[in-house]
Image (cartoon, rainbow, N blue to C red; front, side, top):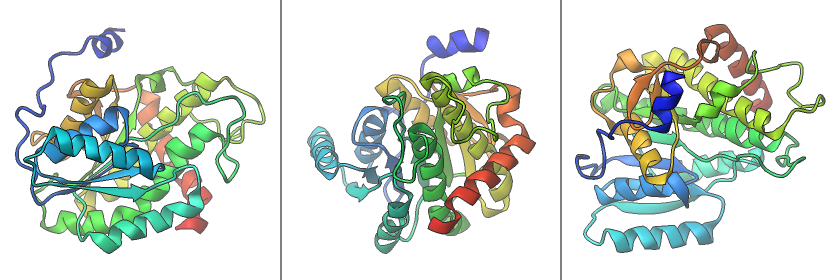
Amino acid sequence: MGQQWSNVFPPTPTLTEKNLSDQAGKVFIVTGSSGGIGKRLASILYQHNGTVYIAARSQKKAEETMAEIRREHPTSSGQLEYLYLDLGDLTTIRKSAEEFLRKESRLDVLWNNAGVMVPPPGSKTVQGYELQLGTNNLGHFLFTQLLHPILRETAKTAPSASVRVIWVSSSVAEMAPRPAIDFSNMDYHREEGLWTKYARSKAGNVLHATEFARRNVDDGIISLKLIAHDPIFGAYTELFAGLHPDITWDQNGGWIAPFGRIASPRKDLIDPDLAKQYWEWTQEQVSKYL
């Protein structure tokens, strides 16, 4: 209860737009950044001269967001780029990754920020997965796998522990049933409530982050999961996870709580056996789209 309470009333952020260092020369992707937390994060990164890809489905909304951010920071030497990304259709994600790879030779931080929360009952992805599972877990997993080679290459020359993948979860993950993933009901033929499905998808983000950290430690890529919050303060949490210099290999696979604290999630959410099993299940679902 104490940790949950501290997440509702977190301490003062330690990394904000006021003390972030210059990000010139770095390249970032923030999924779902045409609004909300992702938009605020993209704005801070651009303000400090980073190259930021607004990865989103709606080009119109993304262009409006980029225009607004440019107006807010007219002296920035950074770049804002739109990247089409529909996490609800696995057949399109490879093309999105390839478009990024055509333009860039490095990727310093990938924020898997986009998400669907409690959609109308019966909502599904193009491939027929429950929408929260398909978007929050399968889509981001596939996108990350396709970008893994460029992350690995960037890590070879970047400062140690600076190349990172951030999997944005939620405190709702702690409310997922036990076990957090029910492999006998991945198609929800036994109906569960929308909030339960959302909690399971957020637990899935934690499990993916845990297993990614285990699998990629030799590649020089840090993997972190975090709890989101209201837009600007949620952005500070994501900023801390993605760029705080105090994060080292000791925190690889760690859980970042608002507004930039190392915390401990429910133990079964970071269970290595469950994380490995869920990774392998997800890999099987997306393998033909890789």
